[in-house]
Length: 71
Image 1: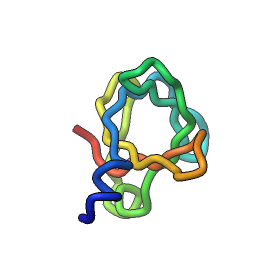
Image 2 (image 1 turned 135 degrees about the vertical axis):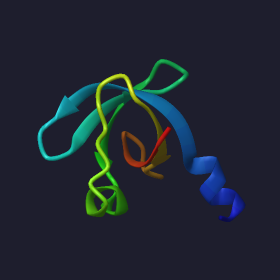
Image 3 (image 1 turned 120 degrees about the vertical axis):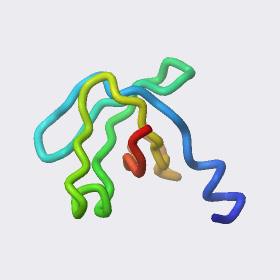
């Protein structure tokens, strides 16, 4: 990973599960963002539940993110 990719990854907690593998994730600063499940997690059928800690890759344009890892 390059340094810019490391800066975009942030840890959060899943607060709500929505249809089509979308989630609301609360970040450490209190901000709640809408996220979707990464393709590799869908491929390997990794389950994400409410209360799970996850790594989120933030969208550079803001407001959205992608769940890339379950912690």
